[in-house]
Image (cartoon, rainbow, N blue to C red; front, side, top):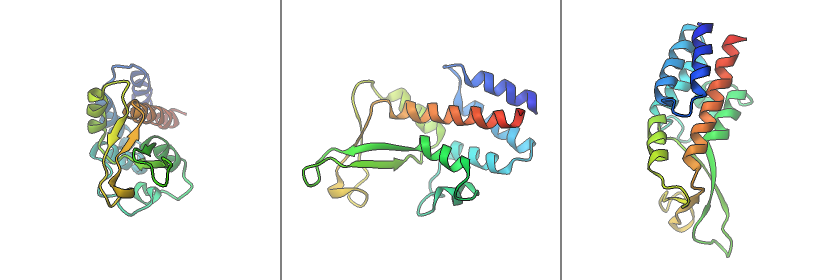
Length: 161
């Protein structure tokens, strides 16, 4: 088990690493170690957080206490800041969005997005003021994936300590 975690950590460092395959492998490593919380976290990453997250705090979805380190880590990469593209009251207020898509969908989005242009997402009239699209930095999906990679690397390190 420890050797598997060490091997995964090394392979996570490769830029061309298949994150979905590594997450699937890591899920099995955590399950074999009896770490149900981290196995469940990776189930969410692989399948996506919808509908589990809708109307629930992240810590409940992850099955951990509110102050748990995993909550802070997941939120740090899944919640990304954008801004409304249509000013509200003359200003473009920031908008924080928790990306619920599966890891495979995020990888596909990162591969599709052209660098240099903001990523515009329309959440509809019930989510933001007047249905204004939200602009995210062009590297939003890359940052999500890098954050996931970093947290997985850290959590696998806890198995080897």
